[in-house]
Image (cartoon, rainbow, N blue to C red; front, side, top):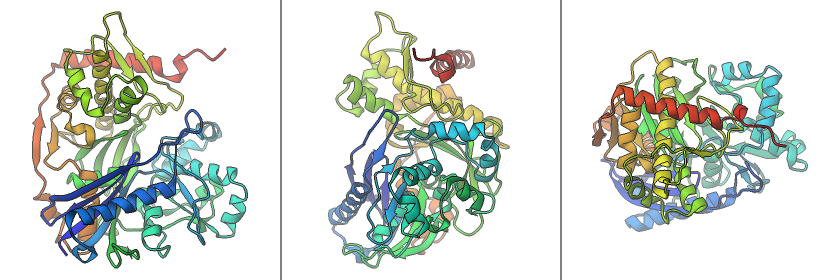
Length: 498
């Protein structure tokens, strides 16, 4: 058995990647699926379509490599987090569309709960800010707005899961309903200090304990595939996408940090076994661990990163393909004072303003599509710098470098600007598929495919290092102007509707 199969279920596509013992990619397959927008601020996925695309790419990856189930030592799963699925235990059919992490329909519910004084209690128990981003209010909404769902949940007929749980349920033919701490810690229902579902939070949201998956370790045999094509292959690794990327980047010790540039942007710093409490509105979240000892990370989430480039393509039509954005942005020396605030789904850390809205400012008659494209790329780096500054304020150890991954990490212009505006070296690894790599490593360690974490650490290598080239005064000036623009985009700066 020479391979590990990583299933990487993301926000816009399902992917499968085969890794060999050296951590080299042997096959990659990918399929996009529909994004459903029933109302402004609402984002949904068809969970059945997620499953169908994920299973299709899994079997395609094996076929492309010319191998069968007998050649696969284990399956690892990494997934978009917080996205909420509820399904019928008897039939396996979802009771409705999955509510995606980007969805803002429960923002007012969160505001009311905050006004009722529940925010601090939730933060202390879960490490999370009370926000519609997380699964708890999404699950409550599904139970409240699906006829008969609450009664069916009380009778034990319904199951809840984040996407990892949904995929494992399907892969095992309904035999296993499980998750791991990295995903459980994103639900707003999990007591991160005790490492278990919190009964008071379940009561607050009206969620029966029997709906929830068993919380297992991130690395270890969790179940066995029952479908032809992967029959008998153990599922041995789970981690939410950002924690998987942290592990895949080799950031397994306190003070090590990575940023993933995907649909959103996610900066995580490992804090070891210390459950660090942020003073700057960052999240405390579970990190993937190899044993029963709980490990933690600080996280700052940017809701819109690569999605801003997709909007340039789909919304404005100024590029035909996302890969064209770098050349367009490089055709001008700078953004010429244009700022792009991509608050399409509100603002994440450290602002947590669900009602902020996107804005392009500083336009003149001389502004072109190139200036807007450059401002869009710069917005990704600016948002990351804001989170990084907050993280520096919370960390007990200095941050000396930032490891990067995700699709936009291939953009040299963006990575250099990131190093400039953050003031730290940016390291791009030889393998940027670190989310899938992290899931593969967790699964491989779970079945003894690799001996230990030290063996894996020796495989990590740098493809390119970007050193800061901007002066301190220029950096401070650019950040000051950016933050002034962000302030104008925030909800309290907008006049009420007439």
